[in-house]
Image 1 (cartoon, rainbow, N blue to C red):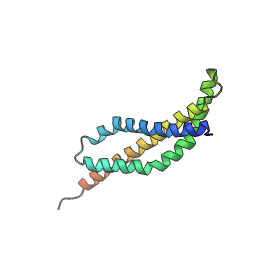
Image 2: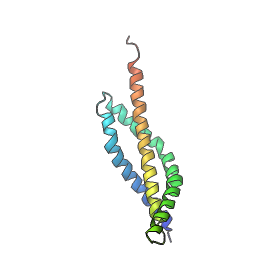
Image 3: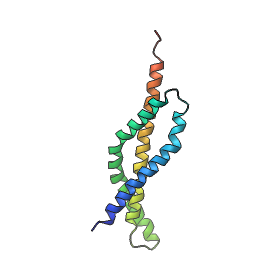
Image 4: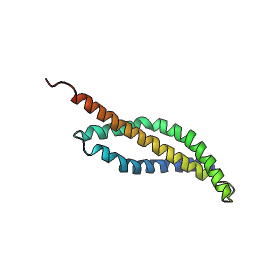
Amino acid sequence: MVSPIWIATALGLAGGLVLAYALGKAVLPRWVEKSEHISLLVRMAFAGTVVALLPALLLSLVVGGTLGGAWGERAFAQLGFSSGAPIGLALGVAVVFALVLVAGAAAGVLLAKALVRYRQSWPRT
């Protein structure tokens, strides 16, 4: 039998991917659309997301699971439910996973912008 904790964790990771996609689609195009080097910025955003995958997974399980589980237990106990830890765990994992992935993509875009500025500062020969 599968534990509710494992199901909540899997749902949290899937929800985190959906949330990260929605956040990235809402925030990142504004940073990229006015640049002359759109392809570089998009590739670096993708690279930043890939680099952030492992830290996002670990942080979401440790920090998001712990804080979300504790929050869910407390919030649902006040509402009279026996246990809300799995729901809070799923929410915590999803939020932390999404935030770290979007931060990785944003770091990639910022690194690409810094690289473009550095290349533009070279003297023309």
